[in-house]
Image (tube, rainbow, N blue to C red; front, side):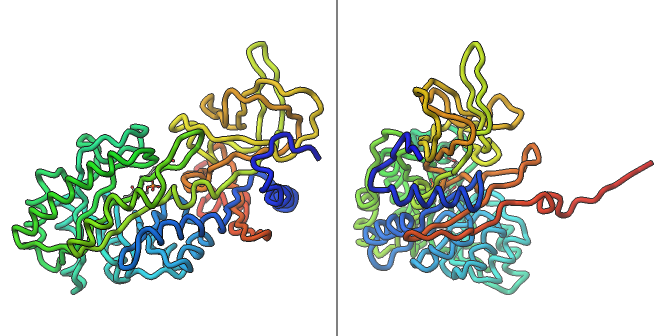
Length: 416
Ligand SMILES: Cc1ncc(COP(=O)(O)O)c(C=O)c1O
Ligand SMILES: N[C@@H](CCCC[NH3+])C(=O)O
């Protein structure tokens, strides 16, 4: 066996494990390293200190075994749907450590969350505030609420994943926030517990977080002058990871932006990281199906596609590629890695220089966040298997979908 690219000589054991997974589980397969997730969690937990709360953003990766692992580490959860709440509970999570984000919560989702007793609703409009109040009255419960503000700062990230500028759909404009809190004091069965903001994802600098925090703090003080006292400030998620050569701030410097200031005011700090906990803990193992040379370039067609990892097609994201196993004896050649889906955007990685043959195995790196979570059955392709590894052992956490799984709920209607 020829390891054409070694990610890191110290991780050769991991390579053997990936090889065993490819042989025994097949490809494409997502593999999540639980030890890496633990490390990231501990870095956050140590820097957060006692009394503060990490609510993992379930949307990044909602695999039950990943959630279970985070439950065991002590995490709370940030959810955006009733489905995510049910996943958290199925994994053993405590609803009292769950915050519920998102611009559109249905009555059924609000009632589920009220019944389960979540920590708070992050409310994104007056309309939603009234809806939550109505449901709480109907159920005879009190809904803990926090207003998500839109601080209008440029997160300096991809425009599709910036959420804190005034033309984004998220949050309530700063100049409307006070009126919204006042409304919350007037509506029935609501209890104001905090303020929330989330300015975007894959942030590589601290300045936008600091700007947002300054604006949120000004609001906290303004509210206090009006007699509205909060228990917590939720600064959302968004800290990025290095997909390439980016220099990322460490977790301690990030949390140092908020921690002491909030502690001095007696406020709990909540954060909602997703990508920075699970992103670099995931790889996607894929096999080379075909090699196709055209006058313009060499296409290497893989058995993974945009239905497994949408990020390159949707955001032009670049994921590192390495060779897990190759039988190719020829020199490396320029090539483009593509998937079998019938879309020209179905490119896994451009501008690669690799020595590859049919049957070789590749790793697509840093797919632990927003990889499987955004996968689909496009082109009637089954979703890939998900595998977790801990130490030197692996477990299939979610089986590869079967044809019957894909047909579930469909009827064969025939109108002759
Ligand atoms: C409200 C909210 N919280 C947390 C997150 C997690 O973000 P990230 O994965 O960038 O940490 C997101 C996604 O951007 C979000 O929308
Ligand atoms: N799906 C995005 C992140 C979106 C964050 C959701 N608020 C990504 O893959 O980078």
